[in-house]
Image (cartoon, rainbow, N blue to C red; front, top):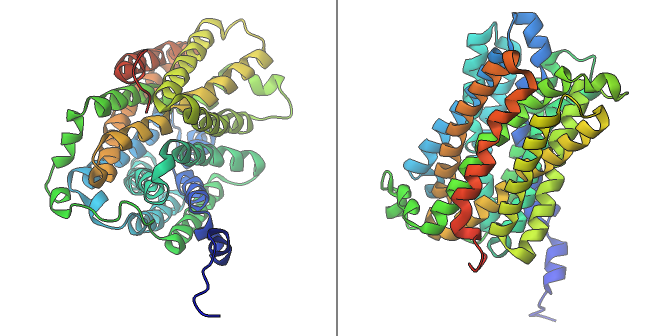
Length: 411
């Protein structure tokens, strides 16, 4: 019989798996693509021994990635590239290049300078993976941005922790092998997004507007966008510095000696990866209380964990300290997808890619300062550097206040 109409379920079943579950596909690609981010940190001990690096030198390598990411997001946002070309095409190209530069770091670096150059190039490519991945989610699921982005950022968090996990499981691998594994994962991420393509939403854009250099800065004229962005900036002061310090905090407190059979990379993986669960819980709660309230609660809980750790790390027993770090690891990232959702909802649809990119760019510029200060002072202050992270969540709550203050409708 001609003219047979397929039901939505039948149509979904007839699609390849990666198109039937687009948000899950993007999340997995984000997981594998962002494993490039902290791949060098998983090899920190080996690099310190091989090249005679200090803690501040490891922080310098981390900041090289952050600087590349900042310049990349500025390029994508201010030039309009993020909204001019298909998001999937940008993602694929950047994942392929990022995998190549990451592998080059592993095999061709001869010291801190050459390593920093390759890490900078990896950061440049990550600008086309993380924020562009968020835009991809919006093109597939604009009606549930907050919860969908929660899964995406959860995968970013797990991707950040992944090199530590690989290092822990492959304890006998040399550091080059661990890093090259991250490149292989990034190649698989490129394949997934190549097969998926762009979603049906937000495809049409005002190309004339997107091409005007710097027009994306007009997003800051919105009170809602400013509030989300300022909350995000406070959150970023804390987030990446915490992730950078986690292995150092564990080693300095000798938690791995008290909590067998874990080693430092294994404990660091667990603490950072807990953020994935925090993102998912935050995404679920955002459906009931709104993204602004969910972000505010996460910021407050993260700040409380930071305060308790800074005040009590000397006296808390190892198991209690690990539990505290797990709560901190879950809370420190749970607000990030909600900030992105709030920002995406507060700016014109044809500027979503650029607005998220410029917000990311400024936020990551803040991380450079925070990481440099904390890593530079760690050998002198030890875990007391946690006090330096506390202003982040406090100022973030103040900046976000116009969005979450009592009596204001949640978004």
